[in-house]
Image (cartoon, rainbow, N blue to C red):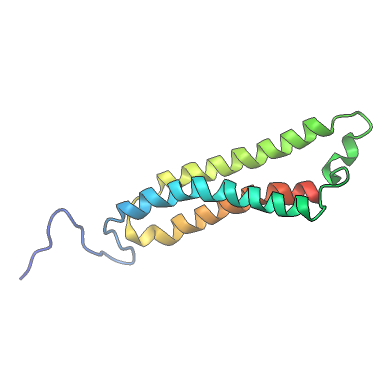
Length: 123
């Protein structure tokens, strides 16, 4: 009867626990580059398209007090903090091959949170 090597665990149950160290490292690092670039590209396309011509809708309650900058920076800060928290969750997911879809889902969420910031500014 063949015995599995100690360095590589076998697939046990519904979760594949074989090592996916490359994916565990590349997913957060790629997300760290791709998500801000994607958000910046969306913002640039919206800027060229004229979406940022007027006062943002989220500033409407603060226009009378001249607090649009504070409201805008607060909203951007919320998006950055939420994206950073989800990005840190990427590092907490174990490096098992069966959790690859979860890591990709978290990476997509990070990208969506950052892309939502310029979209909220235009709305």
